[in-house]
Amino acid sequence: MRTLLILSTLMAFASISTDLYLPALPAMADALHADPGTLQLTISGYLIGFSLGQLLWGPVSDRHGRRLPVAIGLVLFIFGSAGCAISQDAHTLIGWRVLQAVGACASVVISRAMVRDLYSGARAAQMMSTLMTVMAIAPLIGPSVGSLILHVASWRAIFWVLVVVGIATLAGLYCLPETLPRERRIRAPLGNSLAGYASLLRNRSVLGYSVSVGFFYGGIFAYVAGTPFAYITYHHVSPQHYGVLFAAGIVGIMITNQVNARLVLRFGGDRLMRFGAIVAGLMGALLAFDAGSGWGGLTGLVLPLFLFVSTNGFINANAITGALGACPERAGAVSALIGSIQYGAGIAGSALIGFFADGTPRPMAYVIALMGIGCWLSTRLLVPRESVRQTCANTIA
Image (cartoon, rainbow, N blue to C red; front, side, top):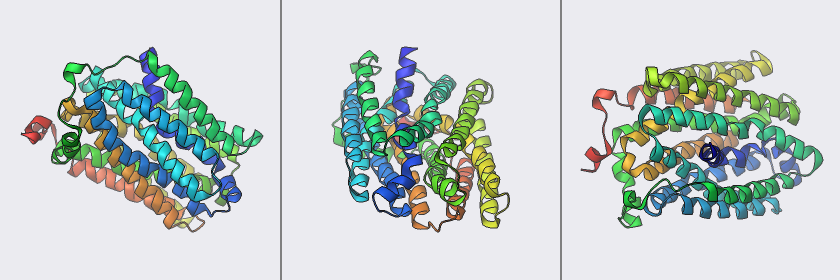
């Protein structure tokens, strides 16, 4: 139980680092004299650091074990969060967000590899869903906690809270056992491990799962970047009520993760992932229609966004488990690759929101529709069927 709790906390660092300060984005824009598009780049900058950093931490953890790289990453996260708290302009804030992300991604990418160290097959997908349900508590309460902090203090206090969270997690890391024994670690030089990403990309199973979940995360981060301004600025929702709307989506994710954990042993992860992708594509198309026509007002945005976000429970855990299962002996590198593609797509999603921002929810809706349909097509065209599933050993050979 203790290991489960610590792994959930480590996996939650991606959402903790962003969801907590989402309600403060409009206030930060005013305080730093920046336009909303520039402030949304604090999310894009974070995703750049998060995406590229994973490519380093994965092979490092395959070579040196899981605990030490996580500890180093947490130290970087603490310094990055403190830098955000003392930033005096938007561009400095973006720079510190990149460092914060490089540290935070170590926790996320390595915790996924640790799950694969301990479990395999459908059981791994089941445990991944359980962990994601537990870790969803962070984004569930994150915007609400951020709103409360903003109510009693400035936005800078939010980042000081993240410093405290990082220190507490670093202390708790000493209770987490090492899951990768020395005899299972990769002995090749680190440079060889980094070059090995090319062989992973030639593996159709790894590539298919990674691209599918990448498209979906492009939509998720378009949602993260776009909803504060779509809800608070355009529809005049209070920051506190925004936290409630955001929390509703997290509840949907928690429910579908639990449903996935119960059904995956019966139906298999691929079938559930494809079902989730179909729903994501349909909800993206409905959202684009609602935003473009103005049909339904705020409700016309909230309902399809809720259903789109909720499909995370069927897509994310099963895609990650499928990719890791294709190459279990390089779990750290595979976790890094799929995570880098996830958050690389997130960079595109959130950046497109900032680039095309026009004061309406339409750019957000169109980007989410594009990503949702891309996710659905990827699961149909790129993820191989069981009969043609490719192992990592075959690819490398």
